Length: 112
Image 1 (tube, rainbow, N blue to C red):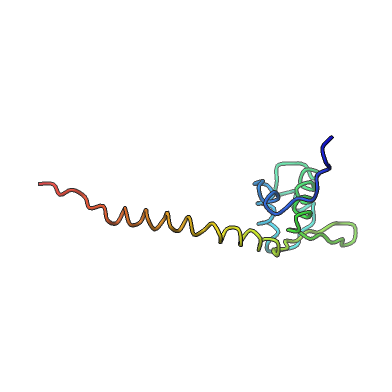
Image 2: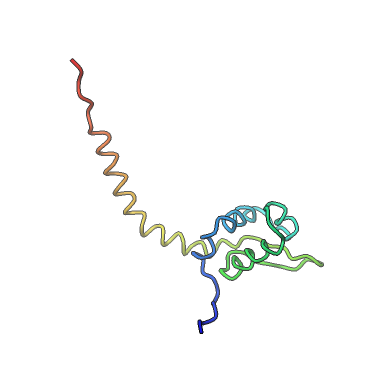
């Protein structure tokens, strides 16, 4: 029997394109589930599941206002992604610098 699945981490949470779109949507304002689900071609239940995963990863915060639940982005966990990206960026920069050198040093043959 498998172990119960724990909380989702930031990398798992952003792996899905729908969740990335949710993060963009919530970047500038707090929104209720009803409004959020209007931006996606899926049921409110499906949107709520995506929000739960983002919440477990700490990427969104939820608060109750009257009878509705509102969600907003909490960008703090994105720092982990930034650190990961910064470490590997040096490899990409080296490859880009090498490509730039090759492209700029490649002189076209002169046609006589």
